[in-house]
Length: 216
Image (cartoon, rainbow, N blue to C red; front, side, top):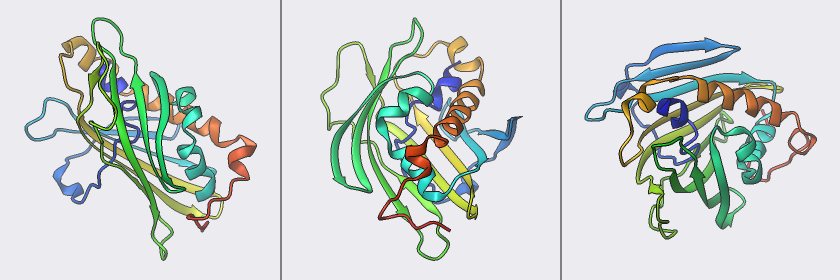
């Protein structure tokens, strides 16, 4: 089940993946258009995940949805709370989030420095953001996530469709029971990506305009 929750932990504790060859991806699930891959990671007991899905969406529609922090508990699996820490610019921010885990595991939290950019030629959008673990004081009873690699890539397929690829590798820290780590490895990502599709249909995102994103 912890892999099931893995998806929610940093939906955006993000660092660039500069060498995808370091992973040996194996398809574990392909349901309702959502493909989930896992890969062993050297010197880690936790596998990396890659989730792929196509959506009927423009680039601005997708980015506006992903950047709207207040709705994340509605679609990111097991997100207990989230708040803005600092808005640097329209495309750069820091945010704090707490993830609820079932007993006996302790909840996790993280601070992400989220930066959104777009390739001017291909129009591909990248959402990166390393963790900033010391930016917010730690809380008693909650384990701080200090090590994470993840990335969103949003590819335009045509004017009304995008392909989303989300990759994540992290160390959740603290003690994690084996049953929690090994059960239901794909349910969390599947539920989250389905819920993301529902959020995209809201008028606020369908009609969104962002000064730093140009549609295909």
